[in-house]
Image (cartoon, rainbow, N blue to C red):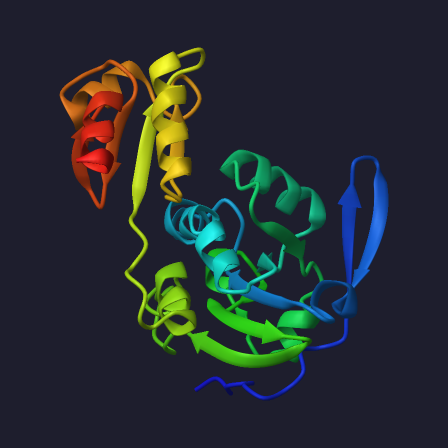
Length: 243
């Protein structure tokens, strides 16, 4: 079993980050002092669960977290800064701060550094999330100590439910768009006006026309899915939002 660190201060370490062509050392105080921060930590950048589920949903719910008083969402992994920076770009996760714990010092201080030698990973982080207020862990969700890479409690929706237990669960919205499409712009503007976060998948960057035809039965953009249900295009979304 892993020790829960609720009520304790986060480890005091220095994160060696890269900003453009320059090195920039960032301390734990720089990240946490005087702020409310949600952290989620995971085994590795570019790995399947981390890329397909963990990062996208936190990025999608940033505005919902912000409305509950969260200043920043941090994704952490025992990877170097070059890997983390490239992963952020690949994920289009502009709402999340990616922190490299390359030496595992922060993760080790949290008691969550584990051997992944069987995968050739060496020492990595166990998957967990936490709410940190002014450097003190208020709430921590640690995945169960089971074989493999369980993903049951460190997700964005579980953390949001802790922060806002009486709020409706934020909708899971995906917009398939294409560059230069005015109807896509209209749909995204309508979602933003309604205060609804969404994940955007862009033609020839994230999907092909053939993929969209397979999942939506149409290849015209935009196509919008809400909680896994195909809504349709911009007109159908307008009807749904405005009745």
